Length: 132
Image 1 (cartoon, rainbow, N blue to C red):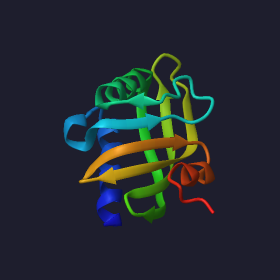
Image 2: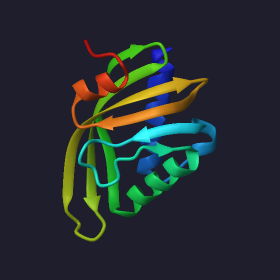
Image 3: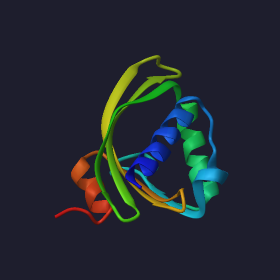
Image 4: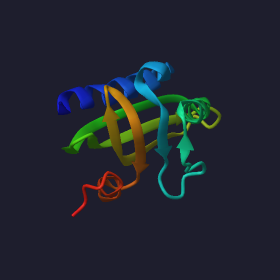
């Protein structure tokens, strides 16, 4: 099952990079998303439409965005936690940045039910209830 969950996450990253949002097929109607501490719009974003609006808003800030070095850290039950680097180039500034991040995803029936983005792997594991 973990390979299917990781594939879902990788597909989401690839579609975001391409500017394609595919929420009806991959997000539960009542899904919840939170951003990392200190993020301008931390959430929680509740419901598919609120999450879509947040991703659309993020997409307009960047001329380019890529997710690299994706690594699964843990998987248990419906939860999977990954670490990755988010590389961006600002639309207005043309400045390139990279942020090491982690995320906890709760996947049910092949769709995201929860997603919690964090700056540190330990915090993503805690969001999934997988920390020690």
